[in-house]
Image 1 (cartoon, each protein chain N blue to C red):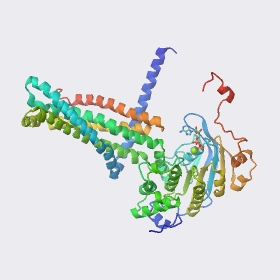
Image 2: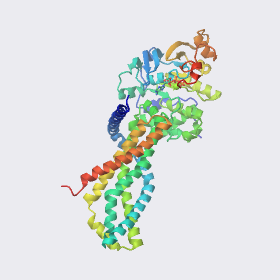
Image 3: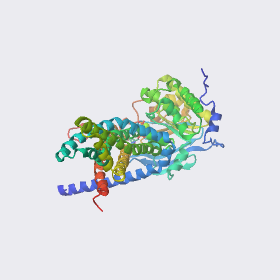
Image 4: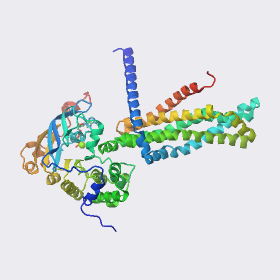
Length: 297
Length: 264
Ligand SMILES: Nc1ncnc2c1ncn2[C@@H]1O[C@H](COP(=O)(O)OP(=O)(O)OP(=O)(O)O)[C@@H](O)[C@H]1O
Ligand SMILES: [Mg+2]
């Protein structure tokens, strides 16, 4: 039996030596990895999904974005990844504006970041092992034995080293999500965006994954953005929190500020109260008249 | 608005819509073709698709070819015997297959077996965000997913049409010579004398290559443009088969008209 290192980032040095992309040799600790100014956006259907968003995500921090279902969190992450263009405003990642970039320039920036998709988005025609190996095979010239060790290390970190031969269809929802997480950190990116990393995890996996995200972030000097609904778990690991409601940032602060916040919205969200300023309903006409006979759906 | 105006409007809207789609499809084809070097540099990706589109279609192609050839043998004999020209059976079977039935029927089968599979696979990859995930990893899905499938299909189609014609001739032989008793020597020698390599075989290959490009182009485009839902993918798959069939038959007429030896 081979011994596998407990720390998921061991072996990093040889690994970077073999990578075509080198980590930034002069990391500036004080700057912002992501800067968003007065951003607004609507999908084709016309309804404005994001309005007047301003954000600063400093290097080395773990920042959470919280908000109700449908408030535009995934959309915001896609903006930061350059997959969607804002209708107005500016998005800068690693100091470069994404708004008028061509595809190859965006690809160059994307090689320094990665995203965990909300539904995993594992490649269904590849095994768990190949899914995690995929970014390495595509972007590096590592030899096969190195890839094997790295993949097993990443899978070990999410507790699924034994599942490396399974196909995505043979994984449970929570397992698939953890494999997707292993794939997202496969190349140790500088900026990792996690879209609901805790959804569908049991309490044990949940804290392990939370610790892992924090540990990875600190070990690599990376920056992490977590979109999540899990207030209590994320308060334990994040540095800063943005609250989004209805496409706007309505509150922000450090974990301690959030915990003790008396802002009604934040209070309601953090303590999960049903009664408060947060509307549970998607914008809709008045309930009573909507149910009344003869009205349109 | 009166019904006539409404009709005109809807015809106009559909026409404009169709032209938009054609424009998108053309740009998509150009994008795919621009990744051709990538598809051949990483040959294992393309070979894998040749396996999925070509090798896995072999059963249906071979079986259908055999039956079409056997039917041609029966029908051909029935007609030729009235003119006392049964020794021409080999020519009749071979020419019908190589010039016409081989490329066309193989293409129709290929569209429903491999084309629909390509559309469904790409459409599902899109619906489950696999293409987005790839894009986020700075890997162009058109290069990694579409181009190998396109070339896999384009390379497979002429080979499948050739297999179809070959097994068809075998089927004609089985019925004509083995079953009915046409002279075996005449069956083969007349065929050898009358089938011209350039005019018959090469033209047949050209047809099947053109069909191959058309079918795989339609299949990858429909998959890539499918709305990311179960319903969207199933509709796209249907459209691939229907559009391919119509395009194959229309192209067949055009190509045959150009290749027709009676003109010029
Ligand atoms: N492709 C799309 N086309 C049109 N509208 C969309 C699209 N994707 C999302 N929307 C709309 O944008 C809004 C925000 O969606 P988004 O996916 O960003 O929400 P979210 O905050 O991630 O929600 P959840 O927590 O449920 O994942 C929703 O109201 C949704 O209706
Ligand atoms: Mg979301």
